[in-house]
Amino acid sequence: MASPKRFILPKLPTELLETVYAHLESDDIKNLRSTCSAMAKLIPLSFDRVFISANSLNLKVFHAIADSETLRHQVTEIVWDDARLTTGPELEEDRMQYEEDGVDPDAVTDNGCPLWFEKGRSDYLNPGSYKLPDYLMGIKESWDYYQQLLQDQHQVLASDADIKAFKHGLQRFPSLKRVTITPSTHGRIRNPLYRTPMIRAFPRGFDYPMPTAWPINELLTPIDVLPWVSEDDSPHQEMYGTDCTVEAYRGKWRGYRVVIRALAEHDGHHITELYIGGNEVGSGLNCRIFDQRCVEYDDLVTLLKRPGFRYLSLDLFTGRLEREDWESYKSGLLYDALAQAKDLEHMCLRSTMDITGGSSEQLDWEEIENYVFPLRTIFPIDQWPRLCHFGISHMLVQLDDLMELLSALPPTLRSVELSNLAWGSLTHRTRELLPSMRDVLDWRSRPIEERPKVHMVVSGAAFGNGDKDGWYVEVDDLVYSFIQLKAAAGMFHGGLHAVRASIPLILRDPQKGINKMKVRRGHFQAQYWNCWPSPGG
Image 1 (cartoon, rainbow, N blue to C red):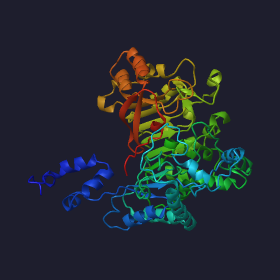
Image 2 (cartoon, helix red, strand yellow; image 1 turned 135 degrees about the horizontal axis):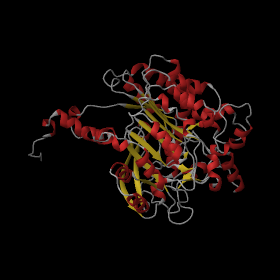
Image 3 (tube, rainbow, N blue to C red; image 1 turned 90 degrees about the horizontal axis):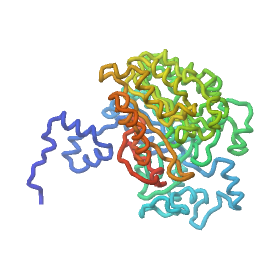
Image 4 (tube, rainbow, N blue to C red; image 1 turned 60 degrees about the horizontal axis):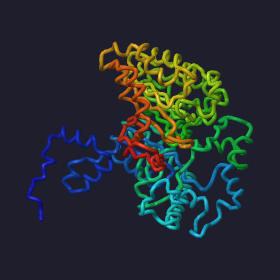
């Protein structure tokens, strides 16, 4: 029986409807459009973000949008998903572990799949650290589907169909301004960072090893970052096996290399924003690109020096760079590259440095002051008169040097991110940071609308030994109260200790920053570490 109530949504003012739609995730919009033909007509299709990867379905959707005279004008961002489905353990250390256990990782199990695939599933020897959903596909069914994906991936890579699609998109999307390159698309178990067409098409309950391509700093066994340019293959073969050459190692960052090359070759594009991700899964661009000049470095500089280039978010895979005396930072090439971006408005640099509770896990805390270097070694802030946002994450800093840098940022600054910093001092750390920001910086004297907002995340060890990973706490409100509202010092110190007992679940959209959801108190279980809710898209 039809409802006697009139369908009033179409009667609402257009401005109000657009405001409502702007707050909906893409899945919600699609569900709303599918309710009836009236809603499908009322809510137009919207594709401001498109995806490229080594998957034919992603490329098919990409081409369909690129060839649509209606939809192609909406696209402002291309996301290059550089995660590739694994075909077995890559690290020589992992293969040796199989040998020590007396097994072959490629041996076929009773389930009909290789052992490495079985071990890569979330239900392998589940220790009860997180609850498995009851709708998981069986191992055999998952392996059958996975093999189809592997074959498809091989065909795309062999034909360079993804590269051709990207070049086609540069010509077909007149509103395109941002390119994102990331290995983090699949996120954590059953919680992708982006819901690409490929991921949306997965059968319900499909369980598979998380794709890898760029090296990942695992929680328990951080790996080193290897030279980008070298005539010696031995370090690469020692880590990845005898077949790994320097060129093969560079090939792990295939997406970065082909995208930055295409942007350097095509002068007609309008790209003014570059987001290089990976920090969500403990990875990023190989920092050794900045050790010495190379093609990939020169191509990046070509993009940064373009007039109007305004946005750079750069996640770096740094391995154990701190034990190499910060060679990639001190070479001067990173500084020189950033100095070319004269119109830069947004700058954020994140590394994979292992930090807990404000301390480096790799460095001797008694000698920590010997490892500190000036932040101006990296950041040419005098070259950025238009800078609106400045952010650093997982960096070793010294309080006075950080304050000098913040003081020198231009008056256009509106936001600052200071996340998971390691302190190069035993006496001047997070406790002393906010009083220094309050007393040294002139932000409180500025008009309210011109005062920079500070986003701060601190990490700390959990209760007990050996269970520190995942403890991240946002203290934005406390920071604002302390710096802007002249709150008492005890408010911050006491508040920080209190909030460290709470665990915020984070919803992170790389383009929109970090949004705090709710706070859970108590022990941080492993299932929360595996949760990276999708930002939609």
